Every structure is written in C-alpha cells, then in structure tokens.
Image (cartoon, rainbow, N blue to C red):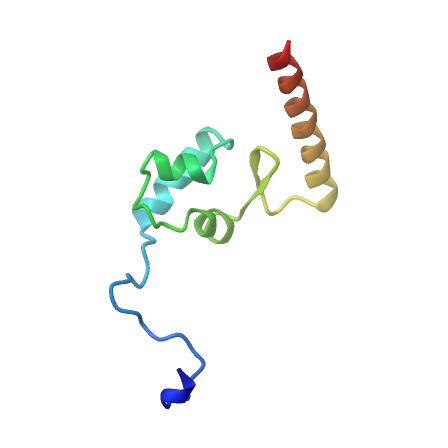
Length: 104
C-alpha cells in the first residue's frame, strides 16, 4: 500500500501465483477444439479440463485466436459489423426454434 511507502502503481509479482498459465500446448488444444466445434463455452473448457483450472480461456480465444463469442458461437474478429449482426440473427433464430421444439 502507499501508506507503507509504495511508490509504484504497476503490478508486482505475487507469491503463490503463476506468472502465466498460457502455454503453446493449451493454445493448440483450444484452437483445435474451436476448429472442430465453435459452440464450445468457457465453462465446458473448464469442466473438460482442457488445461489447468485457471487457464485464461477467454483471453486465449479473444487475444491469440482472434475469436469473439456472439450468441452461441465463436466468431472470427475479422468479420465486419454487418457480418457479425447477420450471424447473430441466424444464431438467435436457431436458438428460438430450438427452444420452441424443446417446449413442444
């Protein structure tokens, strides 16, 4: 704390906490799973123990694989805004149809 004489506002390394849990292996596994099925959720990654429990799945998918979660699928960042909204509309339609079928 600053009351104890700290002068820097940058983060310092914390004890008992890894600097980074991202590995090339984790990134490769997540990339392969995303290529197979873009409907994976972050919770499914964690439950499937794709990597360590604290692995930054969202960070890997957003920052390294350049994917963005829209509705129920991971969408590449390189889509235009119009393409994103079209995909969102399609996902929404499928979601509502699926819900109606489940109710009946």
